[in-house]
Length: 319
Image (tube, rainbow, N blue to C red; front, side):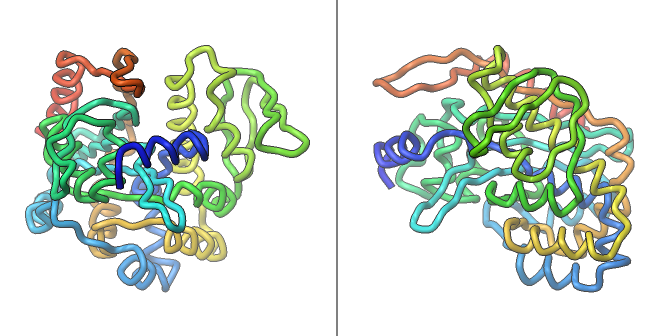
């Protein structure tokens, strides 16, 4: 796919499928006990429908880390992928789990970040938006590009088709968030929806409106990313409290239809058993940079100092 084609498609269908619900990995960490002990079909769903290995990750090395309960780095990809389109990873996060110190860290990488693409594709070596790595080389190129960008090693990935967000929120029975802004969404609903300031409860479609809004937020993309992380944490919290068999069935259906990962069920079980303490203290961070236009295309230029800062943050959780 040519770069011009990607830009053309992006303009045509909008920019709002940027919802990093790929933290479904943490839903498994937080509430995975139910998946293993209550829902008999979990293993089949994970191993037969969700599990997909990639060449960019050393799976034996990752399994060894789990056996030693060492820290893990997991790449979370929110992908807008439709029929006849290779898609792009419009949401990218690195989740670090540090069970020894009972902590975890979630770092967001802006989709427009300009960096060198790395992988098995003719576009490898070119400077482009980091989210275009998926369009050119899929999961493998995205993983390799993120590893090169931050000079880190990734152990696992979790990819979710963003159109499954609404289904997931409804599957856990809705979520509650603390809304920092008061606004009225006139676009997503035919009749609109009022997002009142304060604690609000959202269903699936309402959550879509909540995470997509940008232009009414003084913080722009940064504000939207904050709401995305809010939703992720809300789903984790709600998922961890679920105890009914019917809810687990709904969750597994959504996962099977929308999520791929190189974790098989055995790995998920080990993470659930040995890494749950990492959820006790989660910190989040949004990488920052300066917007610029190069040959008419908008990019986010992230400074070397910011990249080094994030590299050090991840290494601290991995030591």
